[in-house]
Image (cartoon, rainbow, N blue to C red; front, side):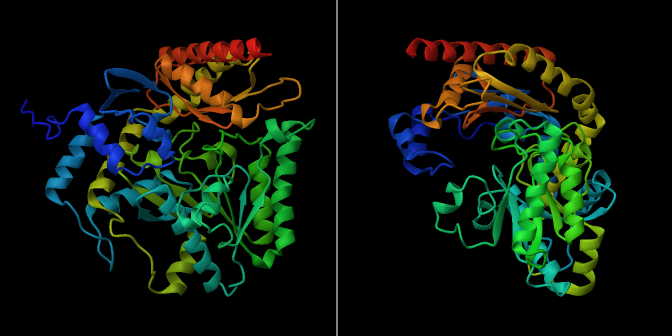
Length: 464
């Protein structure tokens, strides 16, 4: 085999770290952290593992819940090289397309719920959600109801990091830091977070109560002023909040009652992570608009999509005229080809069925078996290959440790020192492993997390 030289091979680790510290403005990073120690450089990855600085780590987060088919699939690299050599770029403006964009939109439509047959292509989850917001706005203008401007989101939501999408988040610091917190017509309803907010209610009753919060928010604003409700089927970034089964069907009923569009943000849950191709299928509801990204290409390349219902498409195509929206790299031939091949691999290798029938149930079994009775753990939540370990100060009252104690960070660091990457968020340890993860690797995750929790709990007990 003819190997091409690595044009970075002459760079030392120290040079790269120095360049990064001097010139790279990092996402979600305190600059003081980089002043104290250099960045950790990951330079290769394969399967469920990433490698860097002579260290190999099991990545139970699949990057950011996105490398669904695992790292290093040669099939995707080959497709990217082939298409880049044949058609490195052309735009999708002014009724122009390419074979890969055409095929990808057809493939997404064939997998999506039957009532969704139009797809807009973009580059990131934030762009997909931003596209959805713009389409909602123009939809109501064309319907003759321009006062419908309010968007209902939820506590603990995460929908992106642009100005518009950050305003939808439950993490208010993402909007307030930049001074745009009040620039959008955004209203917040209760999250279906039974563990923290359900009190003495059963999960089923709390699901209905959380849905009623959506209805109360619509009525308070006036249905004639509400454009859409947006929600992740499972609220991923802020803690893998899995709603009770009663929640989503009731939310859909409420949205239909008041004529409010329903947006399913499937950036995380889309393309199999919940054990079905889409979270809508896992929780039994139909959205008007669906946003997609991470799993679309397993993040081998930046690509995203916004799928719309036939009803929404009919209004846009028959009344709007020229759609004044797009990105230079919308429908990029290389990213579309890689995404198409990624979806074909997920389908051909039966990954979604495996998550639903085998890997998801096994992951839940081993995590609950190892951790549910642990004195530091309040709840173990699993849906497909999305999992959360909710830490608690008191198992009976569900009291949380103060976030400034960084208990979750200590558990995450303990796992990292044992070769495992998880994501601490508040008082929740989050995991979204690659679809190719094995039973043995799930066993390792459960064992490592138990050891990390043991260490943290022992330290806390010694202080009391």
